[in-house]
Length: 113
Length: 111
Image: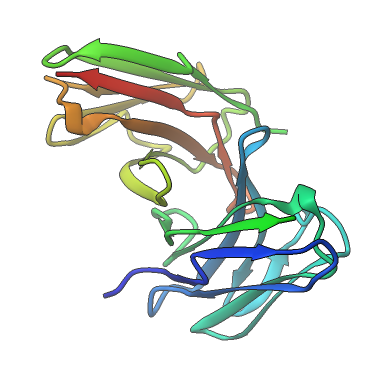
């Protein structure tokens, strides 16, 4: 298995632009998680899905952030409009079940100028 | 709200030394605790997962223990090597399947 796949690996954009991050979970994993990592706040859970349904989005910072999972093999995290404070590394992770380990993708490093 | 603390924040040791990384959490009602390794500019690699009913897990030179009642976990690394240099993160899973991460311990093993 290729593991969790994220694209792009790096994204540089200007303030106000729309940004879309993509994730392909490990096949057969029913849970998908989006995290954000910054120096100031560390790793934070933004939202997670179970069987393509958003379960908890309490970590999504504000309405500019949205996430979708149209099918079991694809999820997107969208920021519109982007701001410099959104600069961070965004990770996607998946797991078979909440009581077993989560597998992380390589992350997308986002820079908003 | 669950809070996870890792001490020390950074650690530098000579090669061959045995070392212990500490993790503490405030809410003992956890499902499991997971230790991760993160190399600079990379994603997270799962090292060990301890279920709430377990006391320890071992993988090679790594041993993780869990004392749920006191809200503590330790990661023991035996005979450290320069290749062990990385940031080590612990994370706990509570009800709602959410992982709460500690701030990490940045480890440097000097040849």
